[in-house]
Length: 229
Image (cartoon, rainbow, N blue to C red; front, side, top):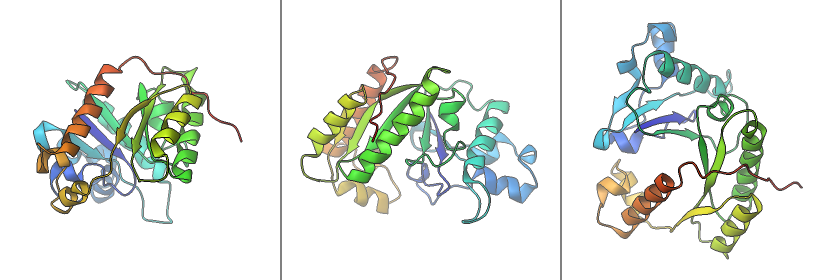
């Protein structure tokens, strides 16, 4: 498994590595002079259960293009064989698709299936619909599909109903409803994932069930039908 963090906050992989945020491709490239001066082992770290981790990073706030880091990182990883002997590549992409750089895994056919993590809050539903619009834009030119929605419970009213209704409207399905549990924060304080911190907990079971559903859903993605306002 390879996780590529595509968020300027560079916090996608820290719990897998049991550390603070790892050094990003852009940060290391700036230190060395250019991305051509980097080696794969400089940016790719191996964490819990052998999971490979990379963070693309971004510029200082208010300066430059954050999406550029995603483009630079993916090109570097391809050129240096990071995708060899990997069964799953997971791109953790910013929820509000603000520019083409963040959409690169979709646009360049790097990702086959997109899973949208959302909740029952209005802006999360709105963002999920926006991402579906982005997937639709590239679904016909490439092979990308909407794998489904994953609801990360925020304990809003009728949250499960809302998530299932939105999935249906988007011509998709709710893959899993992840219940809210404070054990997530307990694990995070110890720089661990729930699976590592409390492997026998109910919440760890939820994440295993989610992983199994995603594995079983391979190849069953759909072309989304976003809601128009």
